[in-house]
Length: 295
Ligand SMILES: C[S@@+](CC[C@H](N)C(=O)[O-])C[C@H]1O[C@@H](n2cnc3c(N)ncnc32)[C@H](O)[C@@H]1O
Image (cartoon, rainbow, N blue to C red):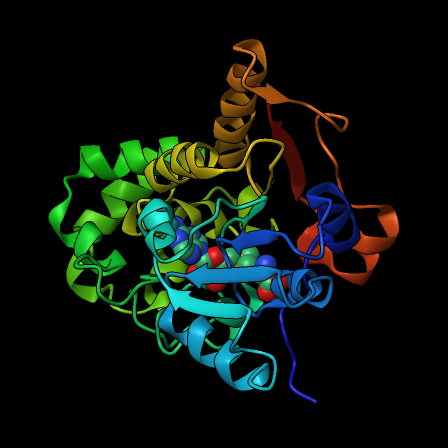
């Protein structure tokens, strides 16, 4: 049986979406389709699920893996969730629930089609584009940005303490940095001994580059705005984030909606995985689910 991405906080997300069998749902981050399929199973013939992903490989995987289900009331489309509003033109109704399960899937890490998302894939090129139509790859950033700008990126998007040292070493050795392994070995060399033995010294640098290549934080703000705008009254929006930069954007956005009387916080503010889920799926450890209902 094919190994697929394990959906995080699945039961909690489905409960929060409060799915009506004849409702209209949008999954903005299809991935391997785990959350989408759980939504789809709860719909009747009048219900609609629209699942989108910016990664063509995710779309191709789901179209094949779930082929007997996709069709009449489960639509799968390649798109960035910043364009979610324009996708609605084809429907004469507003969504009753919208889900965003942010970041990257296990498949993108482990079967990246040569895009080097994971710091473990030594021989892959430094690309990191989820949507291969995007113009700038991770390696381009290393070449084009100044040492100062690289430092800023590693600090801001990776919260990396050794940002300046790493940026300096990258610019000094730029002609020798082409693969994931070239970058992880360089980061390892400039780290103090204590950090070299940490889980992976390059984790923060990789996160920072991926965020910039895919413009993840601006897309999140835009996607949240547009999603809430198109949501039906009493519709629900659920967002799963995996690091503090994402979570801060979601938290501020939801808090503003509650304070301005546009949104209702119907669950406790944050739902985190149980100890059992973290044991079963260590990748869920940093997940946080936040939900809101449109008034
Ligand atoms: C954590 S995975 C989702 C996993 C999915 N819930 C499942 O159960 O398999 C995140 C997915 O969102 C996609 N993604 C990230 N940012 C996106 C964006 N701005 N627009 C559309 N898709 C995006 C990624 O390509 C990735 O496939």
